Image (cartoon, rainbow, N blue to C red):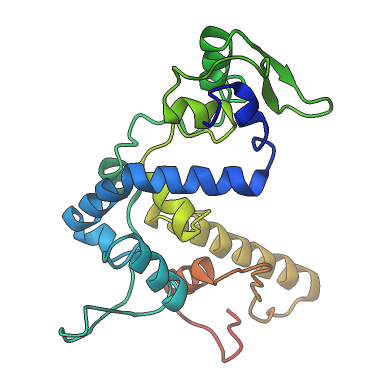
Amino acid sequence: IPNNHFSDIHRWRFNNRFVKWLRSEYLMCKYDAQIRSILSSNPKLKHSALLSLQGKRNLIRDIVKYGLSAPISIGNNNDQNVRISPRLPSQSLLNQAFQMTNWNKTKSLLSEYDQMAHITTQLLNGSMMTIPGTTIQIPDINDEQSVEELTLEEILEVAGCHVTTCNAFNALCENVGIYEFWTLEYVTAFKNYLMKRCRELKEVDTSRNGRKKKDVVILDVGAGNGILAHFIREYMGGKSDNNGHH
């Protein structure tokens, strides 16, 4: 911080793109070694949706280049490439590997700004204010307030980076662009729901028309990279026509 005043933070704290970049870089610098350790000690997780472990940049490049639903070539130029078809990890494996067993899976708007509020009120003599028409809270701090005693993490937190309550799982997901981490339990439950709905739709059509209904078409709208569709098709037995209809 050039002048060790809050005005230094205020100049960029509403630049969302810059704040997002700061958050991402900080989390990866803090957790990169832990991420690599977790993946190397959990082969089932390493060869699932996360795939290869060749340092942060290579991990990102591999996932972006190959996608999670396609076989991946793993190895350096001197090794024989190994073709691996990614598998879905279990929820228990994910929780154990990233120490998330005691995480609260329900987002709480009341506690979302606790860390920011603590720094603002207890360390910077400020207060929290809510942006009108939203639930977003921001610090209201005098520009001349000294921030000299703050740690880097506290500076990022009061600027809106929300890094204090994150761990290696957040860092990994954000850097590889995983916004929904599909697990075996989730996909199995979703598959069961889809199969149940297909049976119900067929029964309704049969009772109305007195004839057997054609196969139900499941259309994935906004499928993104197709990860979910890939595993749903696989867990439904892979029975589809050339157009992907089930």
